[in-house]
Image (cartoon, rainbow, N blue to C red):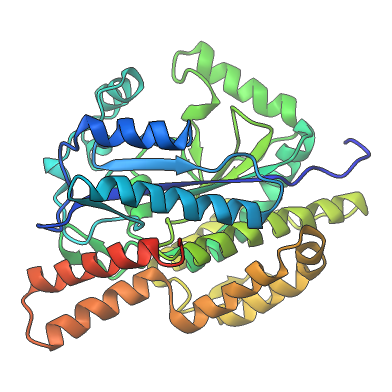
Length: 379
């Protein structure tokens, strides 16, 4: 490992759904001019996603979380402004409250055509959005070493981000139904453990030479070494409806990686737990979010999520100070008070139903909430 500290640069990607302002349903065929104007205004920071009703934005490589937050605000506002000209709006939610996936069309690009051909119905259901966070780790071996350690914390991050309680008009009972859809895809879920960077590369070569994948971009794990950048890319999270929530989670992820790096620098490391155990917490975060706690494997008991969050904040306090993101990380406590987007969406739905609305109208009110929250704080 290099003697100098990693850069810990940060980049955030977010995926949004495009809804029709009149029907509140997803747009099936957005006009080409929408993407053209977004591309002209955002200069390489916006792109189509697998479904035509989706759009993806990404920050540049940022030196700190405050710079990333400023870019996210600008990107969200610009997409909303352009979409509004076409009677549309973006919503930052990992599923649409009532859209029917079977009505959607995938974007006609060679890569997406190949995925659609290979995956069939599994990928046609992929009407989901996520948030991906890249953190700069300039050493290949370090990325693989921290890959196996950071998996322990992924359920903690997922629980804070949940924004997909609905699917096809149904109340799923899960805070993150998105993962239920995504896990049908191959090469998803928790990452494998590798002995080092060469071991990781050897596994990739086997899959490439067998014709299974073209490159490492076809690994869709919850966290992965980016195939394009010298980063460790966290992918487990739902996209956060409130911009400040997403920024807080991205900052905490960066701090966790720096904490693990500090342990390594001091010839220590976080204990590597089996995927069997971490998977249980992943499921609890997917099902309950922050409500029912996660398992403390050392104590062999379920611990309230708030207690676990305080432990993580204490572990990473030094890192938050060093990275200049203590304020952003503290916002994770506020999420416990306000609830995640999944909580707030469900509350809007239940209030509308209690007020006499029928199911469809209640779900439309959820979409209205998402439209408003997506751009809150961007001006």
